[in-house]
Image (cartoon, rainbow, N blue to C red; front, top):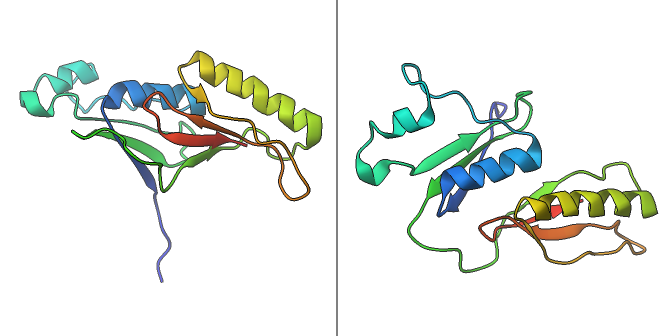
Length: 144
């Protein structure tokens, strides 16, 4: 059996570039440089047929460790709960009040970027606290 070399997470969305830039801010990801021969992504997009302009965008972990995120425009809007979601791990190794304070601070930062705070799930006998959220297009994710 061969090892997986790369993983990409793909989002169906209405506004690929806007959503990619949101996730860059959330994760500290970067927009890769435009294809060779183009100064900007706008320059590249202008070479595409009108129906393909702005139809996708991507971002990546500058350290090369995390998966590439790919955003593709689709005609239909989001209608049901995601079957898969991202967990943004900001509280790893923290417990109790320290963990909750870290999660709440990150929640406030992400709300300022346009995310929606769904609820705060407080620690119990089995689980530590986490905060379910929605990105700017309504996709579910958690900070934990």
